Image (cartoon, rainbow, N blue to C red):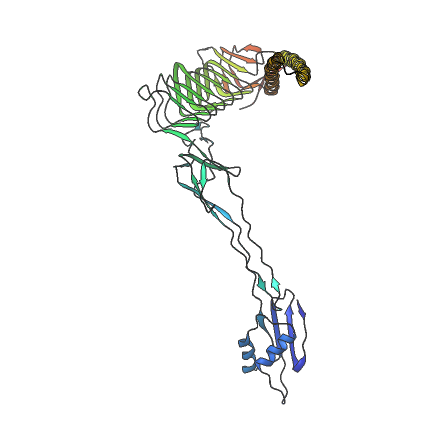
Length: 465
């Protein structure tokens, strides 16, 4: 709908659109004593307030073609040009799925695990494109049509990169893995060993991630102080220790001497005659004659999904297709905790209270000594104060240690309450199942069952095929 602004002088009508971006003219048929000119029509438009975007060629065409008594658009506003927000162009793939693939038979394929983009020192990672300036428009009345300004984005946060003097080009500060997660650009140093690790290469110790393309042979140590360890090949009688995860894309044949320690998860196709201690989960397709202590879950899947021999312990769940074998090889399965957590918690609370009392005693003594020092600055008083300060530090440390231990016990209690053992196919005789300290010996085959602690005992119930 248009809002009419009428100007009936000499039988000419001018209207302007509601948004003031277009003006229309209707020239009536002139009388015998009147002749229109382009100039007179422009003057009439000006009288109506239309001063911008007037197309005199259109007015001229109306007169030449005698297009009278027709409404024709003769003026057009200059549109506003909105600015464009600044944006980041990432020169690497930011959408990386590091989860291992689950194959049709249920087994886990770790072959693609760890394929995170890498960068070399000085390589361009991100280019920032600044906002494009906006341009205001002009309506047919000569007024402004405001354009939307483009937003300037804040600089990227993170580590391991440098920004050029224009604040637009981000480059890698050193060789490493590059990720953009939770709006943080991070380049982590990574040690990549292209071949095998053996007695000829010696032990490896590195602060961040270690990626071994080959195998890890017997007698060597591989230690990542703050990162993860990924091994593409096999691992023999070696020692692997990582602050985060340990991922073996194949597996470990430890021959009774291979061991893994991890602050996170441990994953691999198989573990045989090995020892594993970790705070996270253990995932595998087969576990044979291995001792495991997991701070979370142990999940064994795949075509076989078997745990046979050895002793495996998880704070929460243990799940496998088959446990034990027909030869009744002793296999120990533990879920939850062995000790009385309530007793441990109570003792921890008592220890913390005693430490807090000792801390208060020392703090009060320091205040008294300080009052004496305000009056007397003798060497004996200074020495006494130093002794008390050392005692205060020791008491503080003990209080913090007991508070941390108390929190750990509470977390263990939460996990232990959920402890259970799930067998998707069969559990064989010779298997010992322990849940939160309560033990049961399997004396006959059980199929598709789950073991759980109830009260003072363990119950077994069918979970279906």
